[in-house]
Length: 51
Picture 1 (cartoon, rainbow, N blue to C red):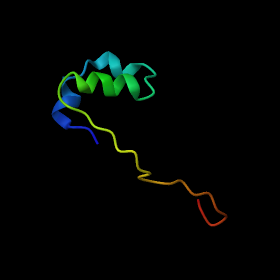
Picture 2: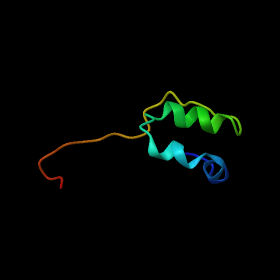
Picture 3: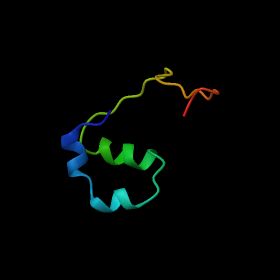
């Protein structure tokens, strides 16, 4: 999750480049603390009944 007020402070050019999250997270860290959770928070399942 990202704080809305932090996202609004980021330069628009950041959204036009391929960042693979790490650059985005570094840019967010310039405006406050960040954290890391070493847990699986979601999964992607492929099965025959999916769309």
